[in-house]
Image 1 (cartoon, rainbow, N blue to C red):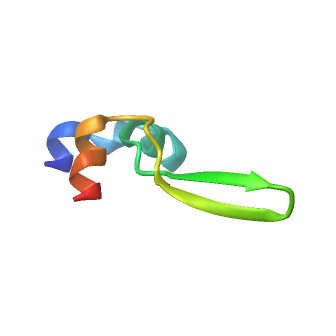
Image 2 (image 1 turned 180 degrees about the vertical axis):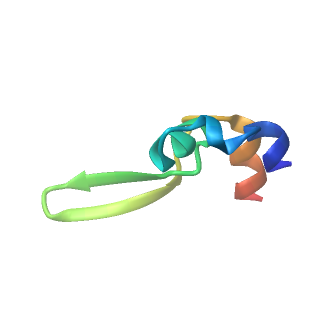
Length: 54
């Protein structure tokens, strides 16, 4: 499923660009010294996010 959605990973120059396309990066909220993760962000491919969230 991931291969179908992402395709050839060699087309990405860096892991950051691959993550931006796929969207499995955690959403981080920061307030002062307190940092909390809020789950997977809504950026990137929605099909990959739903697959990874299941």
